[in-house]
Amino acid sequence: MQFGQHAAASRTIIHISDTHLLADGVLLGGQYDTSANLRAMLARIERVEGASAIVVTGDLTDLGEPDAYRELARLVEPVAQRMGVPVVWVAGNHDERPAMRRDLLGEDPSQRAIRRAFDLDGLRLVALDSTVPGWHHGEIDEEQIAWLREVLSEPAPLGTILALHHPPLPSHVPMFDILELRNQPALAEALDGSDVRAILAGHLHYSMSGSFAGVPTFVAAASCYTMDVARPAREVNGMDAGQSFHLVHVYDDQVTSTVVPVDAADPADFFTPEWYARVEAMTPEERLEFFSRKRA
Ligand SMILES: [Fe+2]
Ligand SMILES: [Fe+2]
Image (cartoon, rainbow, N blue to C red; front, side):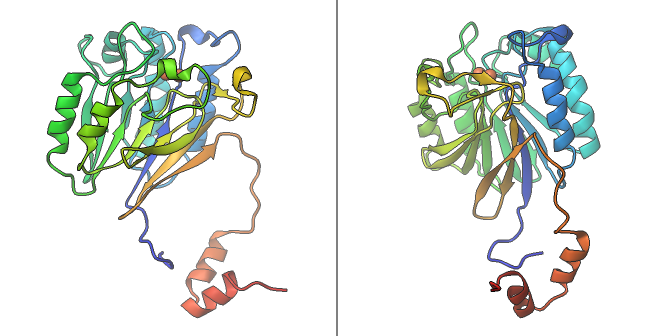
């Protein structure tokens, strides 16, 4: 169905971030039920049609506990299987590489960066590891920059989407820049002239978009808790509300990111399958008259 200027999106990626799971159902900060909040998000995600992948941009667990990774897999993987999509796991500063490798990815534990490239039927998705073991700030090490350059040296049919935890964007929240991604100029240089069409990130616990080295950059909020950025700068704090995920739509010449709140209410019943069928059956003139004409 195309009645406008853009052909339908060729790929839809579900972008989640900052699940911060804890082992044994322990509440994060004594108040956030990270497991229940993720389950609520997944119940909404499972209704999305036509997705190509689920990308989780880091801080998968809060403390890097083996049981938290196993719980994460237990919650997310059946949903992904029913939807028929792969899950792309990205490491965040709260993760621990050895446990993430062993208990989530089923690999030998090691401190090597967890970076890899996926082929989503012609769309390349590159997951980088911006974590620095022992620290909460981020950095893409030289080995990964070199690897990224190598991967990007050959363009992909539908271009590339980059996913990493620490966004290469400024945050207006005081002190967050202490935990920012360092060596952003090196990353920008690696992207220069490449086929990277969008960057997906997390870490901030609030939704944000910007542009890095000319590439649209989308930050998904969190499933665990979000930052209430409506408060005065020095009083911004976490809240058990506002959780959301993003739908990233890849078009021929655009990439868009749509924020989807987990909270929902019973929808209205104006748009029905019958309504769509009726509009579809109209001539272009009838459709414009019916759906665009203002009526007094
Ligand atoms: Fe986080
Ligand atoms: Fe983080």
